[in-house]
Length: 186
Image (cartoon, rainbow, N blue to C red):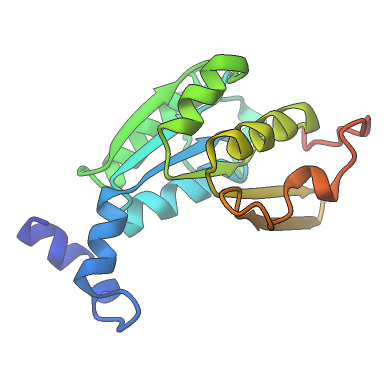
């Protein structure tokens, strides 16, 4: 790490559970975040601020006025812009050392598998069950840990699945794949 990074992350590095070796693991890590909405934006901002070295952010949507009260990576000047483009600029402004790969389309099929296989950890911040199940299947196939978050109205949930461990439950273990109730915040 550069001297500036050591200073930037010094408050984390001084934690005995973290130290320089732990910070280096963050700098070397790649995290895929699917969805740059109300959950994906703050997750990406905190991961960039903490020093994760490479973020892959995926979303096929554009910034709308109704997004701005909860999607903190976007600003009024970004209205109409792709969410990943807007978020990338915010992330790089927060931490100029973070490498941000933007995927400006809906991840599915082989493109989803490619993105998942290139990550150390996957964050599912999507807003529909079909995408969540597809991400789950890809994480299982690629043995990648999955952090799944959801929020609707005043309720939220987060779960972590160790997809590399055959004894670990997965997202499908919690929800029936035939679920039709796709409540979302839009």
